[in-house]
Image 1 (cartoon, helix red, strand yellow):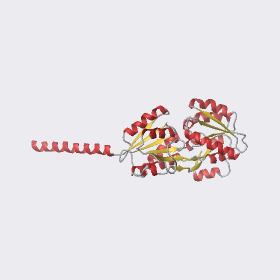
Image 2 (cartoon, one colour):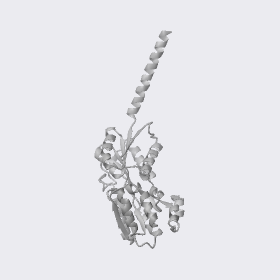
Image 3 (cartoon, helix red, strand yellow):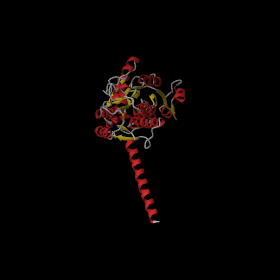
Image 4 (tube, one colour):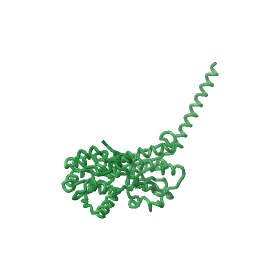
Length: 328
């Protein structure tokens, strides 16, 4: 009897050891997908959520057949280099950079690991790729081609008698600056008077926006990470002045903007996931053209428009209901 018990115990020990080694092997062989983001705010969070959903749709699930390692710099650019180095040193197979500074930090950390851009305004200007059609290195991904001309036209339809519109953006945000330059050129072409204001950090937004709102009839905001994270401040001041804000991102409309033809941040994340899957399956980034993501959708904050007593342009509410979003 003792011999049988001894044999059973030995079998249990051997089986437990085998299972442990098997589990450890799975952990070691499960590919790591790294994600680096500059900060938390609704627009960037939607990109990440879309990215995870896109991976799931392709059969890649965190904790099962891949491991997603997520790093957030919490708005401090000095954290980006350390976090980018960690993802590379942890042998990530592919890394995603959400925001231009995050993508640049990853590109500086490695010349071999594929880097996917998660919605970057100006990849060529940021020196992340040589060209959109032929990236040429280890970086590819999604360009957020924000339809700023459509946003300007929409603001003009809401405010046809406006003497001037204000444009506010963060001077240190490369994507926001790129969109701002596009908007300035478009405004000149459309004969729309545009007054330009810049901020260096979130602390500037309250004072600069208050000054701006005494000089303009409405406010334009590009997809600006810093302002997106501080929309409550801008909207509070705009509401006090009884003037509308027309932002670039759908999440910024939800946070108090009036309307936009905006990019779908969630869809942008899914587009980045699609490219990540191709890289996981062996495709080379230098041969993958950048995805020029320009799928603008109408979004209307009906509650905010009514609060400001605005007349909704003919057909826009119907278009938002049919093809976009209405916030009531």
